[in-house]
Image (spheres, chains in turn brown, green):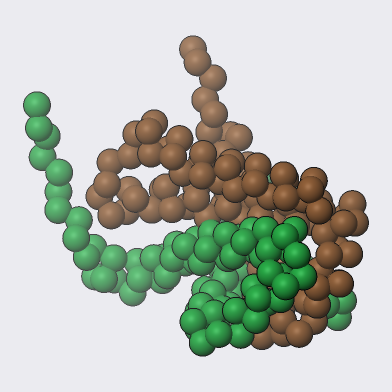
Length: 108
Length: 119
């Protein structure tokens, strides 16, 4: 029997759900209503620091995997039948975003 | 062969419980959009100071403020539901349900305080 890839995507969904539940509101507050704190020098220093890189990658990647996984399952709620193609599209989108973030962080 | 599919239009408007469910699910649109917005900011940061400052300025635009306001409300609701159902999503542990929920909510408070204090 072919092994299911469900546990992998569910773990990424769960990790993103946990991370966004814990720090999502505070992050949204910072970028939306307190962006004076995000000066170029501070943001750059954060993105050049090892811990900062990891934090940025985790937020972008896990938020994407969480959001895309939930969107994919919401299609069902609207009566749209999903198949492997849509599943690959939603998770592929999150994977592409992760890759883009990783490349940018490596270049900074 | 074409099988019968029961029409589903508007099912979630029939019961307030479903409406809350859909509201929580809607948070995923905002979490995804938020991640893309951060990714765009990272791209601008990697380019140059001018580009980054442009991005940072766009955060104060009315569209961005409206987006952040709705996102904040929905993600707070996601946050609450995430920990409210945690006693059911965790494997069985010898900790009372209310303590699991309280632990999660405290986690949100501690993390939020840390970010607001540091940033």
